[in-house]
Every structure is written in structure tokens, then in C-alpha cells.
Amino acid sequence: MTINRQWLLVSRPQGEASVDNFRLIERPLPELQDAQVLVRHHYLSLDPYMRGRMNDAKSYAAPQPLNEVMVGGTAGEVVASRSAAFAPGDKVVGMGGWQEYSVVADAQRGVLRKVDTSRIPLAAHLGVVGMPGVTAWYGLTQIIVPKQGETVVVSAASGAVGGVVGQLAKARGCRVVGIAGGPEKCSYVERELGFDACVDYKAHRDLKALAAALKAACPAGIDGVFENVGGVNLDAVMLRTNAFARIAVCGMISGYDGTPIPMANPSLILINRLKVQGFIVSEHMELWPQALKELGAMVAAGQLKYRESVAHGIAAAPEAFLGVLKGRNFGKQLVKLV
Ligand SMILES: NC(=O)c1ccc[n+]([C@@H]2O[C@H](COP(=O)([O-])OP(=O)(O)OC[C@H]3O[C@@H](n4cnc5c(N)ncnc54)[C@H](OP(=O)(O)O)[C@@H]3O)[C@@H](O)[C@H]2O)c1
Image (cartoon, rainbow, N blue to C red; front, side, top):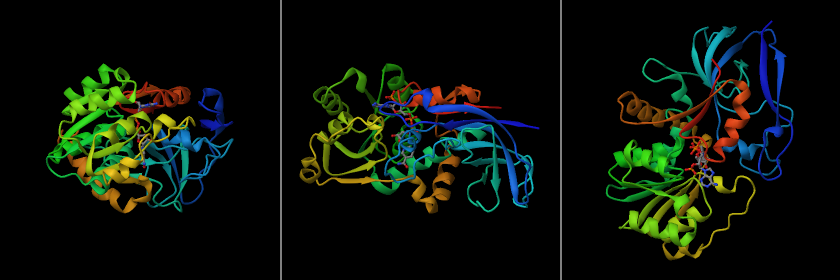
């Protein structure tokens, strides 16, 4: 009998989430039924959106139910199959959740996707050539629609999404400026990822200082904003926008613990005739093949760099997840299980 270790969400956070919101349990794997596939997870993906799912609040997605396996992307290998669509040995990406194995029914078509690991490592299908990569591609190409020579600013710039945004914008001939926390992350963004500049928001704590640093880094103003953080970050960027700038609102991580993050100068939306548009990448599945093709080709050709923070073993998942909300990750946060 194989034992499956699983993390359940057992309580909802008030303010900051903590490890006590989760419980690790062991359950025997059920016998595989007709048209089912058993996947052994090699990697769990830990993503900021999971913090929103922990709340019992109205959102674009239903809350994570209590006492059920925590939601999440997974990459692994089919170890047993009673489905014609999958064979043992297939490498797959799915939404298996925080557990070592998942049983996926054929009927849940689209939930499990076979991936080619001959040129792209399995883990990258959860990051740069996965949901975060497509998120970067979507916000940049469908909302910001950058033109050559324009200036694009992206926050959480060293992260899974932000790092891809900047490199895609550079490939489209833009001046690209990142915002990230600390000199090590900023140096990586400039030297490894090839951004033109990176502003360390931790060295410019208030609005005036951050806006001044952005002014220096963006002498021609800002035409495109890929917003991952919100709060003071967004206020400062908005102050430097040019007329008709486009703001793709991808995330607001500085407010995920429930702290209000009011906008200081909403009148700038009118004064600068800004386009401000939020988006959820999973609502645009029709564009994923196009995005994955471009991202996959760039990674295979060594034109798209990325970095991963890897925690080891299922027990490490909650702590690693909480780290993402604190900026302790440096690149795509994963848990390696196999
Ligand atoms: N709309 C969508 O469909 C969609 C899809 C995927 C992701 N997202 C959003 O995209 C953003 C980035 O996600 P990701 O997966 O790429 O994560 P990530 O950037 O790899 O990790 C999150 C980063 O956010 C920064 N951060 C955390 N708390 C912060 C705070 N209070 N103030 C400023 N920065 C903070 C940290 O970087 P620093 O150390 O630099 O602060 C941290 O490393 C998130 O907002 C996420 O919710 C949206």
C-alpha cells in the first residue's frame, strides 16, 4: 500500500498566514479506477494566488475548502494509468495540489497536460514555460502592447513572472526597468536578466524617494507598467507615467495579507489618460499555446533566463509558501519531492 502525504488547509488566516493554517496528513492511495491516472508529483508550485484562496471571500475563484488538499500546480510522472490518453512514464503538468500523488480522472480533461522534457526541464513547465511565464506574456503582449523604444516598468522583477516580463519586453526593443527588494535581487535583474535598470524599493521606502529613483531610471517617463505589487509601488510608478500609458494589473502582493493599499493619486488615471486593466491568466486559455510556443523556443535557445528557489520534501511546503509572501524566494518557488 502506498501512502500519500497531503497538506490540508485547516483554518483561515486573520491577517498574515501561518504554518498553523495547514496540517500534514497521511492517507493510503485509493485503487485506480477505469479512466483514471495516478501521477507522482516531482515538483509542487507555490504561488502568491494561494494566499487569496485561503480567505473565505468573494474573488475571481472560489475559496480553498477547509480540510481539503491545498490547491496548486504540480509537475510529475504518470506511474499508473487506466486511461487511453496517458501511459506510465508520461511527464505531466497538472493541478494536483500540495500532496505527493494525485489521481486524475479522464473526465477532467485539460487538467493534466503532457509536456516534453527533452529540451526544457520538467520544473520549468511550472515556471518560465508554465503559468507564470504565460502570465508575463499575456500582460505584456495583450494589455501593455509595447512598442519599440518605449519604457516598461515591472515590479517583483526578480520573480517568476517579473523576470519573464522584462526579458520579453527587452526582446521587443523596450527600455526595461525593474523594481525589486534588495541589492542582490536588483543586481541579478540587471546583470543576469539584462534589464536596463532595477530600483531597490527597500532602499527607497516612501513614495517621494521611490518616485525620484524611478525618475532617474526612466528619463523618458513610463509607457507600460506590469504591476505585481500595488501600494506605494504602484503610486510611485503612476507618478512617472506618460500620457496613454498602459498598466497591466497582474498582482497586488503587498496587500494579500488584508492590509488596505489605497491608491494615492487615482486622478492620474484621468490626467495621463491611463489604461488600467486587471487580468487572470487562467481566463485566457485560448492564448496559452501561442505563449508557450514563444516561451519554450526562447528557453530552448537560451534566450530566456530564469531562476528557481527549491525547497525539499513535502514537509517544507507551508514555510516555503509563506516565504514567497515575504520575498524570501529568489525566482520561481518550487518544492522538490522526487
Ligand atoms: N493575474 C494573474 O493571472 C497572475 C498569475 C500569476 C501571478 N500573478 C501575480 O504576479 C505576481 C508575481 O507572482 P510570482 O509567482 O512571479 O511570484 P514571485 O515574484 O516569484 O514572488 C513574489 C515576490 O513578490 C515580492 N513581494 C512579496 N511581498 C511584497 C511586498 N509586500 N511588497 C513588495 N514586493 C513584495 C517579493 O519580491 P521582492 O523581494 O523583490 O520584494 C517576492 O519574491 C504576484 O502578485 C502574483 O499574485 C498573477
